[in-house]
Image (cartoon, rainbow, N blue to C red; front, side):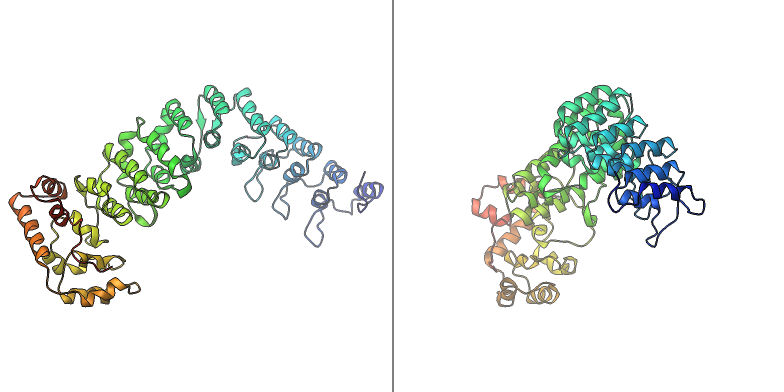
Length: 461
């Protein structure tokens, strides 16, 4: 029965018989009669218009097609009529969605089955990816899996991405046992990598073991590696690290270790320091950062000065930082030093004289640059230089610089002298040799702390 505000069926049938009444005329809103029938939920008039030969292939003013509207309204009869009259079942609307995509969004089970029956592509517009979420009925997920398996349809990479994300062990194993090949586009590869952070680690490992060729194709492309390695979120860091372990413990490990040095994260930051910084944001204690760093180092990833900076600025002179001082540290920076402290700690060539000569190399965006005066009583002109170039609001520590004595203490002079003597006498080349030697010296612990800059000599804070 037609709605109360609808034209009478008899009058409508009469108008359809008149040649002078165009079936595709538009009103003041630029809408055709067929579009008005869809919008006003007049199914009977939509059927009559289609059978009378109105234009069905145009995209309406709202960006949708007749098939999209038919599916959204739940009009299976109209949808079948459109398809049987030549409407392409996979035609996209202005948002790039197919009718099957719309059916998935509204969980229209009967409409999904009908579209699949008429040959709708379950991969196009990633219908499975949209419908197969935890908030959607399991029945909708089963429709796609049964269709893919029963009709021997090839699986799309994003189908696996959805199952891996949802931790759907039962369906994942079902698909894994059936699938012999996976189809994907370059965009699918990128999207897949961006979602690894959400994958179930156990299922992800199984996927890598089954599809080694595809895994090699993904993770031997530098830009794709960078997509995953840079895709860190504070709330998902624990799972990210687990999947990182899965990847680096796979046969792809050697390639990944080589490539990680070339990858950069946001704002050009090197990748490993960026990952450590994310750990710091996630966990205020050094346990997570220690786990990640030790794992990467065990695989052969270089320890860089940026890693030293992140750990020291986040946790201070902690046990992890002490251990790192006993390792080979690679300097990949340009001439500018971003953080004076801890630069003076891990760069054994830095002395009060070299600091005074090269003060311009220091980066004055470092909010803690004044802390160098906790270790060195540098000349007054250097203090004034720091104060003049400091880009942040002055604090109490910075204000105290002008009153700090210009004469180094005897302890500082002794430390500087012993530091230079050890480097010269034992031909020390790096921090690993220097701090290992300090540890073996037959001197008191307090003297070792002073010599290694663990103990401050002056206190500005």
